[in-house]
Amino acid sequence: MGICKVSGIIVQRDEHVLRVAPGEHVTFGRGTADLVLADPAVSRLAGRIDAVDDYWMISNLSRSATYVVDNPEGGGEFVKVPAGRVRAPIPFELARVRLPAESASFLVFAPEHVLLHPDAPREGQETVLAFPLDVTAKYFLVLVALCEPRLRDPLSTVIPTVPEIISRLAHLGLGRSAVNFHIDYLARVKLRVKSPEQPGKSDWQRAALVSLALRHDLVTAGHLRLLETHGRPSP
Image 1 (cartoon, helix red, strand yellow):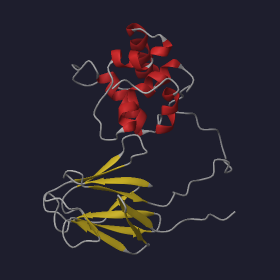
Image 2 (cartoon, helix red, strand yellow):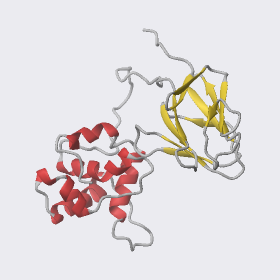
Image 3 (cartoon, helix red, strand yellow):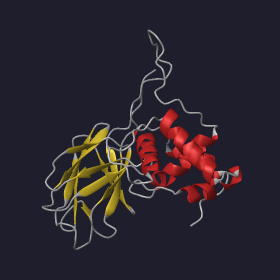
């Protein structure tokens, strides 16, 4: 079976849509550019987007500003593009480019990545899962609740406290000791996170669990549906 791919990328800001074919590029900035970002904090020629088949590259043409490219659909992944960085490759299918200016951002859509078919023949002994997790277990719901802020906003630094997890998972009737037990079980047995060399912060376990789970896609935005059946979190 052949693979049908859409070549090129789409750059979008509000109603302004630019289609960029492989080998082509568009510029962005507050001056004469293909995509105008009318903010005094944005350089006249702030950057450039190059389309390369099924991925794209960004060049930061400013002299001092660092740009951030994040994955709105991922688990907190982002790439920092420092001033003067040219042709930095971006691996996300959907990405948001953020400039350090109020409302200075836009989206970039790349073609769907080609992945190995899950039924492809394999040889040799079956690989053991490094982190075997049961998505139907209570400890997994605790892990999803821990990761929720970062899944909803990749740039969020919020890590839910134990009382906040109790409130978020109120339907389970968990108390403080039960939530602490699940967090400790995840840290020691399931994900085996290492304790810090200089202990002191009481939330190191929760922070380490969130970092590891999102870095290896053990918890993704798709798992949020496990929480949605029980309502949105309290504001």
